[in-house]
Length: 147
Image 1 (tube, one colour):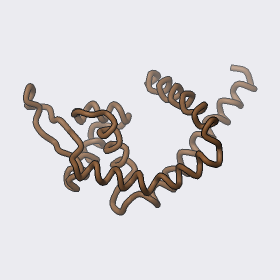
Image 2 (cartoon, rainbow, N blue to C red):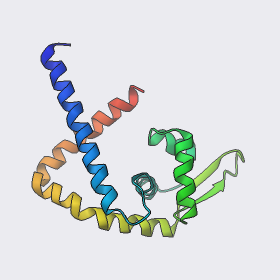
Image 3 (cartoon, rainbow, N blue to C red):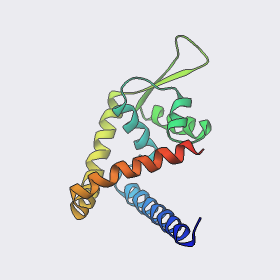
Image 4 (cartoon, rainbow, N blue to C red):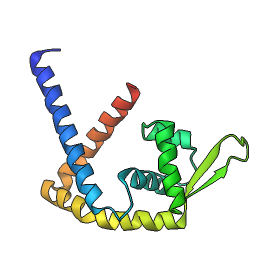
């Protein structure tokens, strides 16, 4: 890789890491009390993608260990935000679905997050944000494929 391409790659990585740290910090401050970013992420996924998922599927989707996902799911179940049931076809597996309370908690989180994200969109402009989202998605898919 050429020096200029290397420098560009390092600059891209630095910006991604800095943005990730800032967003996580700001989200942590505005999410409803007791809700962690991982909780919101799982609730949001389950809300967008109707139906049930296994803990293993969720761990793969979020690129975390099964143990980390189990910890997150235990907290969400304790809070009443998800339902966990045995898989009727394979009793060794569990199935996870968002509960009505989980949908309500997700909506509260979105209400808390919306002003912060809205400010970013207003500052950058809707058109620029629409242009960058597909690029970020493509980068994410590329990175997942390289695992």
